Amino acid sequence: MVERIAFWGSSVDSLPTLRLLNQEFKMEVVITSPDRPKGRGKKILPSVVKEEALRIGIKEIHTPERLDKAFKSFYFSKKIDLAVVVSYGKIIPESILFYPEYKTLNIHFSLLPKWRGASPVEHAILNGDEKTGISIIELVKKLDAGPIYSKIEIPLNKDKFAYEIREELSELGAREILKVIKNIKNIKPEPQPEKGITYAPKLRKEDGFFKWDFPSIKIFRMIKAFTPWPSAYTFFKGKRLIITDAVLSEKREGKPGEIFKISKEGIGVTCGDNTSLTILSVKPEGKKVMPAYDFINGARLKVGDYF
Image: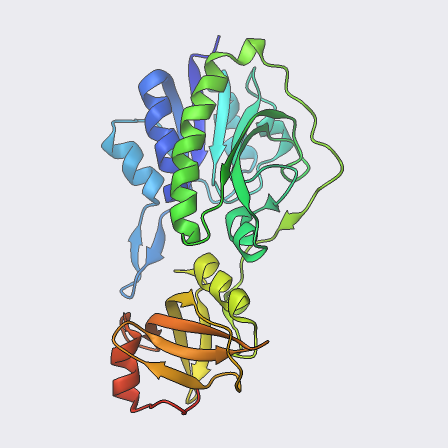
């Protein structure tokens, strides 16, 4: 029977599970990323998980820089029935994973074995997947390759941003892992199939760069996948221009980057393969997000001009 839990997490995606498990079990320890400088002022601030753990009254919170011998000594001194990992951000050594009686479970935001790795939702959007979901797995040494305790599939809403989909999946995963833990003695996890394995590597800032000769569907998916980070961006007059929202528009012949429509609703731009996109909002370098119409007026662009 599971009574004492160790929780590992660092991002906002971790919070629904932290809150729910804290209501149902004794939270023996929370492990999260160290306090880091954030924002323009580079003020040292805790992770959102540390903030929430303090708010809900968890006493034992650790923020190790390294999962070294000293940390292992501390961890192995705790009475832990099971550990749960949600968006922790570091590779956890095998000895730590296998320490709890019921091992270490993870909520992964994809239908494994598809999209193993750090950014499964973003890659599902970029790939044009029709569905997504969560997989509850046991963590093992090999990346996201452990046996599956449970899997739930949902449609992938193509109009939603990645952060909105992750929010939905984090709530879904929290509810499902609670069911798994309460019934863990009766669940026989299934090995992942070798067929269908794909990988979703960690996003890099340069991944967000696009050119207007890309097909509009590719740019649209980049906007949905990469907002707010690393963002979908191009360059205008030598400065970075982030496209923060857009909708697909009609088929259209013309040179990529040509502005063919200007209205308060959005700016029509021709893309590659005779496609087009209506830009709704942008973030010019060094400025705040603004409607595309305001940006166009400020830049003194007109129909027939080019980005």
